Length: 210
Image 1 (cartoon, one colour):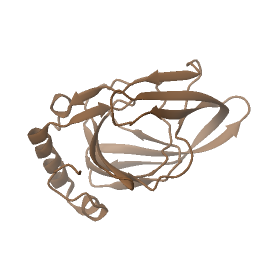
Image 2 (cartoon, one colour):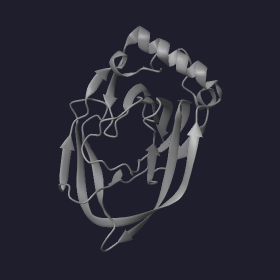
Image 3 (cartoon, rainbow, N blue to C red):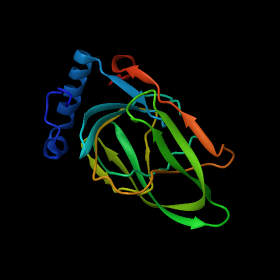
């Protein structure tokens, strides 16, 4: 059942409506309903808006100020779905990487596993180091501001870098699942297997648009 956020969750509407209208509607919904959110390992908050076999709609929010990272501080990763986002507040640095497998040097590749529903706080999130290592180089990097849309193809290595100087919010649709595992470009010195759970908070506790 989609959240009653006051506007239709369609590509046409989300990508074309004024960003301040979308932000105001989600803010009103949060004040009214106070849904829960999960804390992503990269320090931003994830609110599930709608979910079906075809796609997940999510609201992502990076608060102003320092953010707490969970597990290994490895920011470059892939998704097994196409990710389409609309920035409705703040700005975001969208970075895509070319990745080359190497025998020595580079960084270890980890694979991601969920022991259950990834939107449930009790689900174990597992990073498992593979035998592969890779070296990266930046393919494209761009700074996107409120109103912009961007798309990440499935299994592309990317990073969403957000300054601590201001709050940033996006509406995200993940769709068109593709075979293959989600991967993280890891760091040396961390365990072969890393397991953690995502914290759950009320949105009123953690989301401040100012």
